[in-house]
Figure: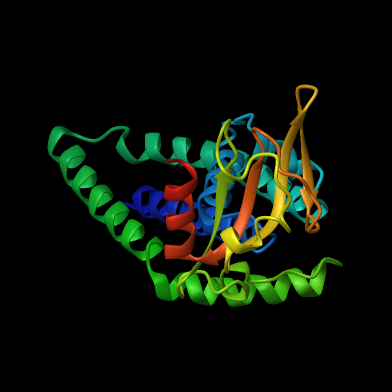
Length: 229
């Protein structure tokens, strides 16, 4: 039974480590989904190559977080497999069933514990203070900073051929934009995508531009519907 409880402890620590890593990445500006995916990829050693993965190595704090997840993940996965084998080695049919049931119950409890919103909020506070203390980069809770979840959202609007915003300046579109703010533009040029932050009023929107916009959720939905007609 000692091996079984040891396995559950290792799994619990692994889950907590991934959660800490995901929150830490989220606080550097990544979305919750991307931060969680990258943390799990780094910890498991899956090594997915995505655009978001490439941004990790160019960001000093994210690079430290990913390095820590890779190191702890290497030890955690190996130890978990070894402990799992020891848990069931030498057991009779009845013993295997009992231990299997206990393992499933334990894993279910860990899953529910990991999904706790209260635990998430506590971890976020602790990790924010840690990053501010041990790094030179100022971190922010972007969800709270932008009022996300309180009626506001950040969305992406694509400029396609023959839509009403194409080949017009942001200043000319002022009446059409309304309360919609254009925070940035991703523009494809020569096979590469360039990031243009805080575009000015004279900036001309081209075909295939991707606009990063900020507004109330219903405003973004209406603009998407109107521009894609």
